[in-house]
Length: 327
Image (cartoon, rainbow, N blue to C red; front, side, top):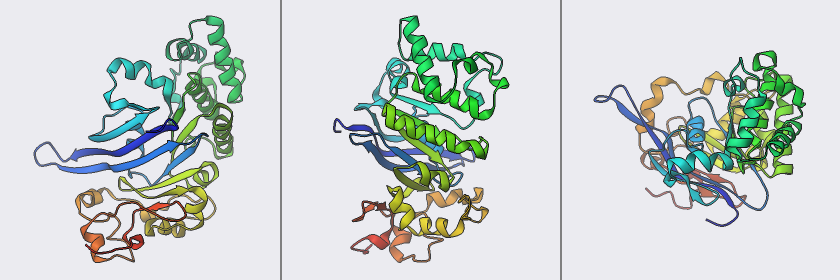
């Protein structure tokens, strides 16, 4: 791992078992995912996919909220799976912070927000001086375009957009290098979503915070992203720059998404939603999209494709782009 690597995920896998301990079946909610955040400047890396594709499971493993079955996660050069529970509790929150879908879950609805922010400054960020802690809180509120007066209210007195901005303020108080934002605008009024996304862009530029943005919404993905990974049934189907992925999608699944999604808001249509009965398909050998792909070949049903790197820099998991298609 180089000194410019902020995050490195290697072969990250999470296996769940359904249907009981004895007769249950195993499936890979996340299947050997590898990617990284690196470089001299901060990036917004978006993981886009339909419900049930594994993107939230992946996010929760990166946040150390659930343990992976196997794989490796390095944050700022440290293998977080090898950290002691003490270090995970103290060091990791200073390096990586979450912003969740429901902002009201981040605060007690009957308690004022301000004490939460001060607690984050003193206990998580480790600021011992009270005046400095207050200043850090005020800086965070200013960064998300809120006045300190709002933090003196309880969450139930505020709108969803205001509470989400407060949760973002709380996340940036420790000055993390990474924020994992899991569907952060899906519960926010449509008229306010772009304001939240613009705050993410501003934080990236001004504070150097990297974002892992989890979403099912292609319009926000295209607007905010530097890099995009399209996730399908636990694996990355395609990964590259936003312009490359949206300009010329390579994987048949990505192409299907572009053709199937309404052009106005570009959200998933019900036509391609993974059904519960399809869980067994996770166990089949070969490409997970083989049963739907119009270009399917014999090798697609026998062997899962790796990510082939194209000249554009896009990586695509499809045998169509292999120099050799021999089984």
